Image (spheres, rainbow, N blue to C red):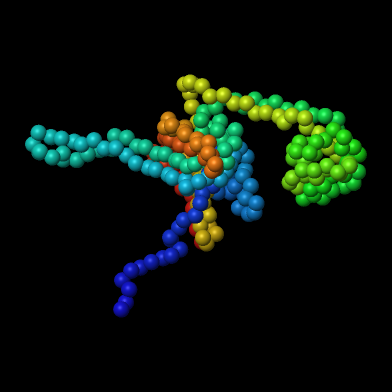
Length: 268
């Protein structure tokens, strides 16, 4: 029997999204390459920033409310009209960083305190990226289970044998005997506060998605603010996700039919 159904599997899409943001007032991107490099490692262009991994997807909602038009001559409304639009973006952020909490929970400016350090020593031989063993001039001030700094990296110490330090995780780049290794006696801090503020920050959001054929999709929300619903975090054995809810609003001076958000999709 002939099949009456007409299916184009290339138009059946899915896959996770990549949620990124930029300050409100950033030039609205005209193509995906304005936001992100189109080849590996797909780095973002400035000033765009990643919100990182998410859980249970990234939901986009668009809806409107109507009001009926009643007349005396009819027991039913003769028509209706749109009297309000709502647009929202929501997800759960898996990367529960101070910076992401600052955005989602409307936090204060972040105040950073540098680590407290001891006397620096030097490497006795060059090391390659990926190394987990450091041979140093003196390991006297380092402690097992403590921390050290090499270059811009801070690493946890696994074990010390004489003047050889073993790291829990590898270094990210090569170092030479001119590079210093510094013991950390107390890690630095980031401090953020939350209060009864009156203003919400305004940002631009972009949602990126790669389809199964390799082509890409992007939705850009011109003007977004954090929604007012409760943001509950659960301290438990499992992952502590950070809820993110945003409302999108019309951008002044933009054509009415695209002043809230627009989509850009690569075509073959």
